Image (cartoon, rainbow, N blue to C red):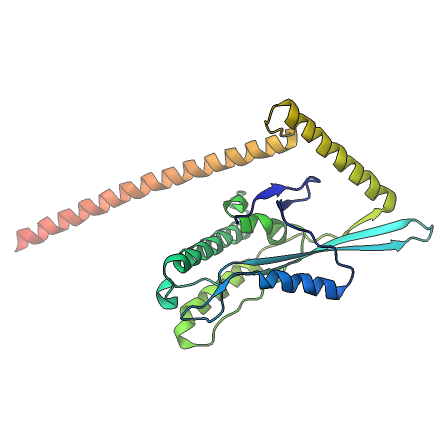
Length: 274
């Protein structure tokens, strides 16, 4: 079923609603959860691949390490690792995909195209501050990994065959652009035990406040001031982008009309010569 993305209650990023978070005590439990997720991934046979991935896969591992300081206080260090396996772009004509498989290929290619636009926007951040993270669920989930505070490694997979030269070059260019992104890695957050308790208490209070507002407004949705300003800024950015696209479209139409006029003039001149 379609994923529904929501802002995390502690404003730490975006998360998926109605997903199960599994608590793992050791490496074996982590691998078991990974294998369970991989077994649920949708695959199908095409002319190019017997086990073609029909979706992307994202495995998020949240690590919490607890230790004691010299004065006997609890020290908790939090970290997060995102493992992402992107489905490859697919040429429908070569893979022989039809009907449902063709629609899946279209969705995969569209999400990869959006990811490419985000990478291009991040590389050329000096020219435009707008980065289209919200254009797809994939880029929203990977926002911190793409242009945030994380260290990111990209593994590009290419085929050695001569008939895949175009795809290989495209993939390498994709990876080269991604390599040019400048992230700002930061150390893992460190908290003392009492600070964790206070943070959870504040989160519970915030959720209770939002629930009360929800009830008082008879089903309405409460949005705090910071989030409202962020939404308004995003809306203004989208409007500016639409205006720029409208101007580009108008200029393109003018150029097309001029080119068509030149073509008609050339045809008339050629007819006159004959």
